[in-house]
Length: 54
Image (cartoon, rainbow, N blue to C red; front, top):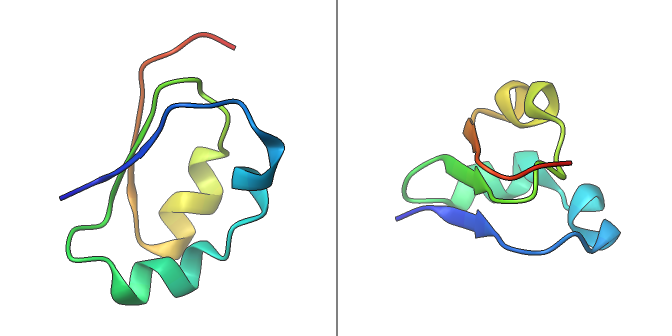
């Protein structure tokens, strides 16, 4: 399981990542657009993989 972000919609930046980390089976975020701040995700307990271009 992973959370995969396939869009550049700014709403995804404002998600409650700590709350998502509490319910995620696996704490992995694949960010295909490099939209998200990796430090914010890591502080929430996620592993971040960026694969797109900004």
